[in-house]
Length: 398
Image (cartoon, rainbow, N blue to C red; front, side, top):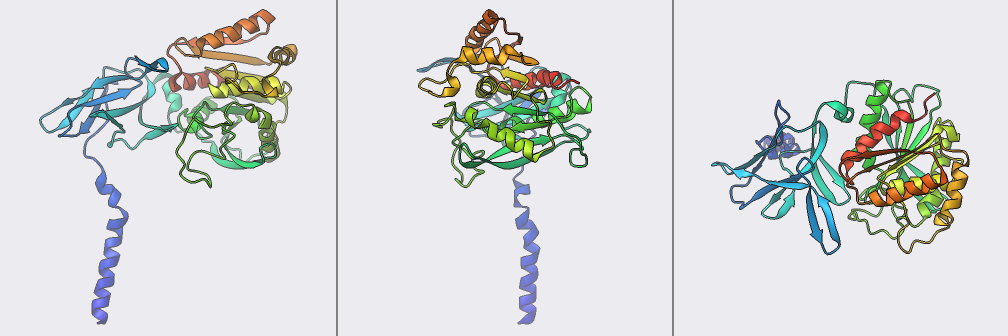
């Protein structure tokens, strides 16, 4: 009896490593994407019974899609060709250095590449990513340099009467030192959250690499959640696995701007900051640019550096808040002592291009100084990552 029980125990113990590592055996034998020496890329998908397989990604020519809500630019698509073994393939021409995203469309169903474990979430869309090295794309790599610390930090907002989460980057050596640092508040766009800039924007890799090269001053970077209806990113709160959505009633209604001093006060009381306007910057993309514009004019003594990346300018229809009242008067007060840097950047194909053009006309008419950068393409992460690499070196120069 004892011998039988002993043998049974051995069998159970022997099976544990197998069960614990079951996921290993699900790895696909195909290589996709395969990056070649000339920077062309081959995509592969095993689906012998499929009728069609396409790849869609931001490395393909943009296509115009027309819907009931109007026309907009979307990533291009390309057909894969099936070989005799039922594997579908497509090879690009040589690609320029960049972080690219893509998905497959199999018989009309969009899905990620099962051979590529590297994925990102943008709102409710999951895509795979790959990196072509070289040029400014080298900022996006994890390089052999001193690394900062990325923390997920909870703070209490008295204005919103809730606990909320931030992503905070502290530069290499922060924990071992006593030095105080300037702070850059980096804000995401609609559909994003406090994870967006660190995951989609590669902000932490950019900061590590640019600080290590001496191109950027060491700084603390605070990445907020701009959705006042949410405590934190989807699936990371007590609300459980609620699907991400842009349909949030508190979005761009003035409350995020109103509560922002709560964020600044928390950071100044928790981290070794230099709590002064000249050592604070704020910037963001799309909705984050909108927030940066209105926060900086609402609190003109808080930020000396302002970055608007493809920024929305005007409040949403029906949004009523004191924050959005008397815009001309608040801009006048802000520019009475002009910011050290007021920086506007947008793509020539961005759907917010005209709104930014009109805003610049307002600044020009009043004689308010700013710098303007216009780039190719539209409302995409490719532009925003580049804007970040161009904006950071301008901050906090001694």
